[in-house]
Amino acid sequence: ETAVFQTPNYHVTQVGNEVSFNCKQTLGHDTMYWYKQDSKKLLKIMFSYNNKQLIVNETVPRRFSPQSSDKAHLNLRIKSVEPEDSAVYLCASSAGTGVDTQYFGPGTRLLVL
Amino acid sequence: SQLAEENPWALSVHEGESVTVNCSYKTSITALQWYRQKSGEGPAQLILIRSNEREKRNGRLRATLDTSSQSSSLSITATRCEDTAVYFCATDSSGSWQLIFGSGTQLTVMP
Image: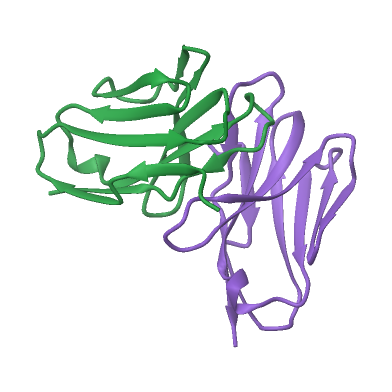
């Protein structure tokens, strides 16, 4: 049963464009995350957002920014995409942080031409 | 470098066989989680085993944890084709906000 929803499923764009991905969770969780998964299936945390506190992985380029209207929504914006941004972007949520179980959405696949 | 790592990188078995995936990690942890990711889907948790537990079961799945050797294993008995997926272990570095995923083991179950 899906409780973390992501749109779009797939997006193709040109280098330099801006893209935005949406994520919504219906679990009532307090924390949401964005991960990047590369072609080798490696999962890297990008952001964690909890009670309006944003924690950023220091390796994430500045062109990436999360946007949240409430605790059920966490969108991801990428200004001026680059070829290395091609990946699957996964949104997740959890009740708390750290050890709590994370529930993932199906992902948004981005292809930058 | 990865704080958690599964091995082997890939496995193939036939339906009905048992299989074990191993995980090694590098930090003290509060708990270790096993996730499964099927093609086209996000990861889904299978088992969470806390640092004071040695074994946890969930149906056909059995996870073990050895904090002295910083290792864990996930065993699947009576495998089915639908068990085909990438299996990840994930750890929290004690006190950290992050859940760190290993690089995953691709399991293929053949008819």
